[in-house]
View 1: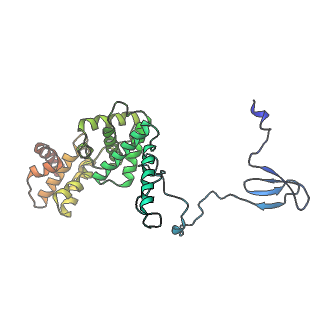
View 2 (view 1 turned 90 degrees about the horizontal axis):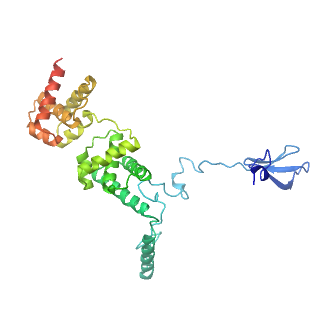
Length: 307
């Protein structure tokens, strides 16, 4: 049936003609989303404007009772599922034995019907891995949610087929760290993920190629605070090492080098300039690089400062 047979020309779905008459002239009365007005004399009979904004003010923080919790990206069901308690009710009162047994049966039935498909079960498992890895690395909730959203995008693009869920979850965490410029290496992510580094690297390359991640190159200055914290260096050394790293970045000598190794060289040179002479092997061990890498980059820093 053509649309013209259902809707007449010039039909406004927001306007509804009421059966009431105008109290002034007895004409036709129509109601839209804002007001009830007479079509003949223009009398506004009633105002019914719909306010689509929030019904509270910023100062009414305690009155937000009916809004419910926010949507959670880290949960497969966005946090909208029902949580059945165990020992107490909503008012904090202790439940009887009969009621606890009834709730146990309800929780069992809810767990059986929690997932509607295998894909939803994989999503729940993957997001759980992302939350676990993020917690082990001490990442913020914002970064954790970005990693969860990246895992959702990977599943929507059918990138989980033939790959390990744990590897994709670890790659999502590493990809979120790279996109935000956080100083995390593949080893840091692979250890809590209990997945081989090669598998995490392959999964990250797949995410980067298929999803086009806006990954930023990690600069050596981002690794300086981490190395300083592990070696318990004073603030004077930290400022000097960061200044050396930023000077090298501005000169363009850090392109294509290992950022952690160059940061270790900057830290070692800063320690030497501040009158401290630690073992070069200790600095290289903290940065997870070899001593020759630190020695080579130190020569570059010395030649740069001599100019």
